[in-house]
Length: 124
Image (cartoon, rainbow, N blue to C red; front, side):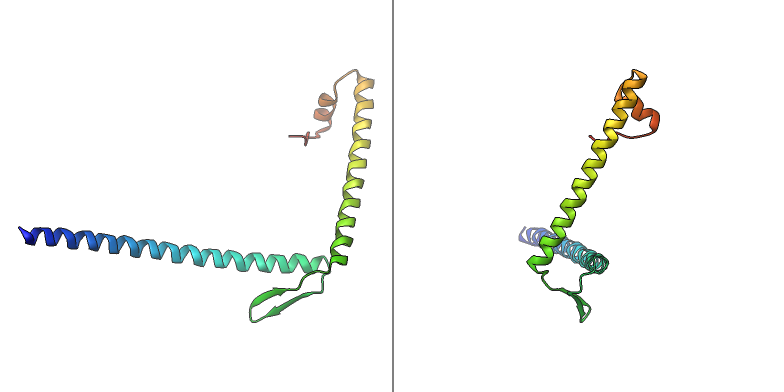
């Protein structure tokens, strides 16, 4: 009777070993995919940084090393971004006023005028 228990115990150990090997293989594949994704993101970051005119980006040994952007450049970029947002909001407000005038003229709603003009409401 001891012999069948030994066989069952060996089967359990074998199943655990096979399960562990399968898990390790899946983990290895996932890590490889994540490394590929990381490399792609680094390349995209480099491209976008170069488009913004940053010169503090260097390539070394197939790794992308990014130097810290000085706080002066960061503040400058943030001010530019805020200025663009303000300009966008002003233009949007102006366009909504014009749409309101058109709606009043037609005795209609803003929503129906926007639909007529093919403008989607972005306040979702």
